[in-house]
Amino acid sequence: MKVLISGGAGYIGSTVASACLDAGITPVVLDSLVTGRREFARGRAFYEGDIADGGLIDTIFAEHPDIEAVVHCAALIVVPDSVADPVGYYRANVAKSLDFVEHLLRNGCEKMIFSSSASIYEAGDDFTVDESSGLAPQSPYARTKAVCEGMFADISATQPIRILSLRYFNPIGADPKMRTGLQLRRPSHALGKMIEAWEEGTPFQVTGTSWPTRDGSGIRDYIHVWDLATAHVAALERFGTFTEDVINLGTGRGTTVRELVDAFNEVVERPIEVVETGPRPGDVVGAYTRTELARRLLEWEPRHTVAEGIRHSLEWARIRPEILG
Image (cartoon, rainbow, N blue to C red; front, top):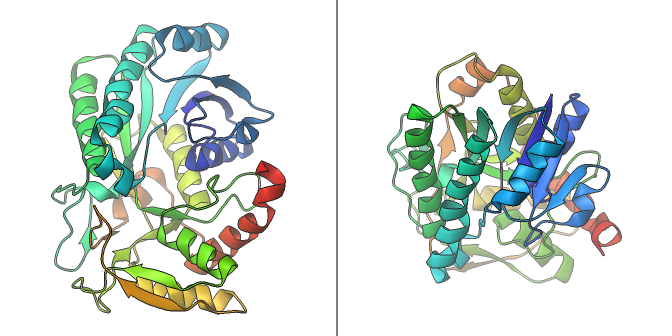
């Protein structure tokens, strides 16, 4: 099988490409390199360009007529940035995705997996959600994902393409073989900020301490990025064996920010200190998923712990300068 991966030189897309290679699936990588890294596409068929470039998409399919499916990972993903630049986020995540699907239809592509987000959910009183839970996206970034899901549902209802949305919870870690990891030196998510604080010897900021959780900090479902990637392989291999068009990808366990700090400090020799601040623009209390559907439909379940995700993130942070400069 051959698969086109948009955003395949980014953190998640490149890890999906590695998981595909390990499973005998050939990835073809498309990435604009706005946030992706050329190093992550080394040794793989790679096209630098935009998903909205119809001529480029035509060229890719002409040169790889055996592409059977697309994994659409290309997107801007930083919540505070989406608050500051909603126009840019809607253009990159929604308008260009619409162009992309139009180009796929023209080239006869019948299968697409869309990288969606659990940030679109309205969490229940116990902070758990499943695929039938209500939606209430709280940031422009989250709304771009919800808009895309609705747009893709309308398209797949009448056009010859099936689109499966995989709603990611919170990826951490790196490829266990250390082929790829977070390309950003200063990522905006909690674990990235912890590593930054640990490296620099500065306190880690817990952003928001008045949420209605067990300790007042936000709660998340932290899934190892390799588990996330292997779920894509399972979805590609089982595409068409089920009719559902949305599947959550998480661990089924909720971890608060304070608990993530505790787990981090158990892994490192020198613990980080904590200071409390208010929430960032667009922050939400968070949620974690019930995982029955992914287990049943994909015959998949996560295998890595939060501690392993932290260890792999730290290992990647140490070698990142050698790989990415």
